Amino acid sequence: MYPIKLKPILKQHIWGGEALLDMKKGQRLRVDKNKIYGESWDVSGIEGNISQITNGFLKGNNLQEAIEVYMGELVGEEVFERYGLEFPLLLKTLHCKDKTSVQVHPDDDLAAERHDCCGKTEMWYIVDAEPQALLHIGFKDPKITREQYIDAVAKGTVSDIIEPVSVKAGDAFLIPSGTVHSISGGVTLIEIQQPVDLTYRIFDWNRVDSNGNSRELHTAYAVDAIDFTSTAEACKRNYTIRTNEAVEIAHCDYFTCNIIKLEQNAERQLGKIESFVLYYCTEGSAEIITDDGSESLRRGEVVLIPADANDITLAGNATLLEYYID
Image (cartoon, rainbow, N blue to C red; front, top):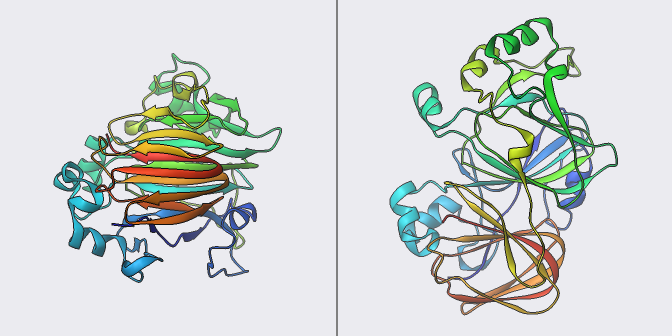
């Protein structure tokens, strides 16, 4: 099978901004000028938002239809046995012109009990950040109690107890389910996550939409989902770039993420990875060459390498994020 490209799905958000469309220019997306976009779902198998293939003989089919035909050849035998027709990751691009809500995601057990779905562990790679941009991850006091948290929610002072983190391009964070978090304005990031659209909003900075309505909060649900011990320091991923080599940024039960700083041709032996591989180009441009075809990749674009690929060549000058299931 050949390298597969997919059509991004734009999502409207009150906190979005124009920089998202700049990341996606050249991808022939239909844009409503009256909407504010905050997310692009770049690879999705979520019902109602299944990615469409845009190249090769599978063009016009969606990702689930391709999995139904090619099964383990496309996603990997063990991956197919575990997830079936559901694509097991959701890959997004986010740009926040304003702050996202303070929120938390339930773990697998709680999500299964309440919603009959998986939980949400995610990872962020910062593409761009304005000088004063922040993330909020976990709590300032690592010994905060459930009662102190509930008191802050009741008083509307949640913003006073969450931990601010200064960020710059290249920073990365693994956000396990249960971790309270928020993204400030001025941040563009790539997010890889479990395949679910499930968020408990705790605090939304007292804002309202154009009609004067505030968004729904899920404070009662959230309190049982929070891991009060999760900290920003534990979530931060530290790594050192090695040119033309894949360097691991994050690994968890749900995905592995590597970064490749490409300055000349590099060979990647994917035969030992029993999974599809996603490449996201965060800067520059590259060519992905397999035995069954090649595909170009520019900033903001993603390509899916089927699991039956063995050795591939990466050519060009680019920074690539590499995702797969280990």
